Length: 144
Image 1: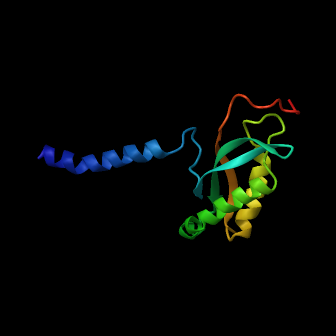
Image 2: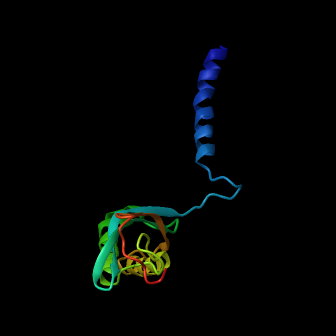
């Protein structure tokens, strides 16, 4: 009899463990918003008119809880295209080095582009990763 009640109780215990592991630490309430990760894209780093490096950038878009995330996922290629076009039109070259990008400028431009493309429920843009193609052999940065 105890075995049956233990087996009936086991899934509830396992589910509760998974839920607590997924909850954020620090005692803060979980964010009720939704997010969409944009596939990483290569953005050029430019000195003058010469490309000196590429930075592979991963971006996360945060949406309101009421947003239609499925519709946003369908528009992800357009969001990615807008990021690539913006990065080639006016490169997000950092003011200090050639192995990172100007994150604040990228976030501002990307937020404007996503809203323009129909992401009216977007709440924020975050750069999740930056990986430089080259780390060595780069020219000296004029701002360093």
